[in-house]
Image 1 (cartoon, one colour):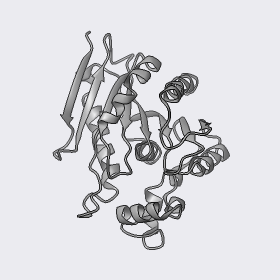
Image 2 (cartoon, one colour; image 1 turned 180 degrees about the horizontal axis):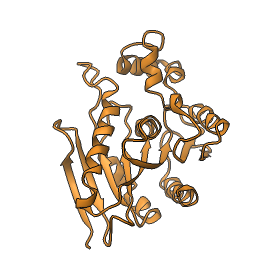
Image 3 (cartoon, rainbow, N blue to C red; image 1 turned 90 degrees about the horizontal axis):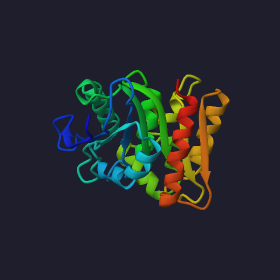
Length: 256
């Protein structure tokens, strides 16, 4: 079976509800899991094309996988359209669409969720909160927001952004913040998770991942945490390449 790329396939009716699919040669429903990549951008920016900067590094580390990269509806500061959980719901919608296409694409229904920044948050949130939706096997997250109530007070930008995105402060909308935080759904049965976070990150502070992984440790979850010294919100190409190798090794050890 030859390799095949499917670009801008609609998984919903909104123009942002599209995805790209990269199917490898020789794939099968028995042996070709899917890595689903969710882009970052603070829930207000970014696109699925972010995946392209990692595509070759991911392909080298995950040679037997198919890849899907999705867009989702973005929050609009001007109109307040697409407040959370719009983005969370779009991930659900995309995964349900993928579930219905695996036979057509000749791939397995096993899903690895991956993402950076806001995409890492969405990957963790779905993998922990909505694990029964899709055959979710693991999560790979780069510098993800994990606990929105504590992130709110990090600086004025996070206060402004989260207040608009969630319709108020943590005091005004406590349930919205808790419902939208991966940390609210930590339990011993969470899927295997590997997290990478730079110690010099000034956008999402590294303590978001420090505290999150301590909670994973407390419940004896399967996880690995890589603190990347002296790197910020975004890594060098060499670091990303090594990170995907580390992620592939982690999955090989921890997936049943």
